[in-house]
Length: 284
Image (cartoon, rainbow, N blue to C red):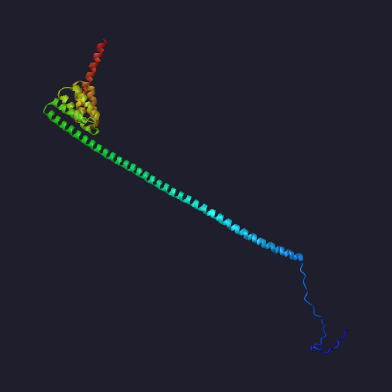
């Protein structure tokens, strides 16, 4: 055990406090020795960093210049493309305008054609109407002329001028020979001509005209009776009976026909007997 004895004040008057702690002598701060290799490495690294920074700056500078050059080239190219695009647009607009003009012209031509066709159709219809009107007028005029001629023939017939009456009836027939609406008129004219021939005792002609009238009107009773009379005058009793029979088919109550058929049957039977005798005589 160490015993520290009290020490008196030194000559400079410093007072030392009593303590039980051990007093350590004062030391200088430690000197840190730098590792030369580390320092060298750090310097090298710093130098490398500075160089790299300079390289980056230069690179950046060159890069900016390159980018600027590239940007300038790109912008120049874009302007050229834009100019081309503008030219294309202008050309396209011109082509579109030309196409629209052509379409408009084509539309006008089509409208012109349609209008022309419509006008042609209208003209055709008008012409057809005119033709129809003219045809109707022609028919009406022909029917009027034929009727006038027939009336003149009737007047001549009453006066006994049968030849002149025949001529008028013939004029009437020629005027309406191709007109379907004139069937009845033509039938009457043939019947009147038959009456003229009957008055003139031309019974063969009477039969011919009656037949023509009956072709136009098969139930013309007056003509059937006149033809039956003509057949009777020519001793065609069987033919006369056939016409009378037709009259009775149309009008069973026709008195003249009923009386006539009663009279004709014996005449027809007598004629058949004569024909048989003549045939027997020829064979003997």
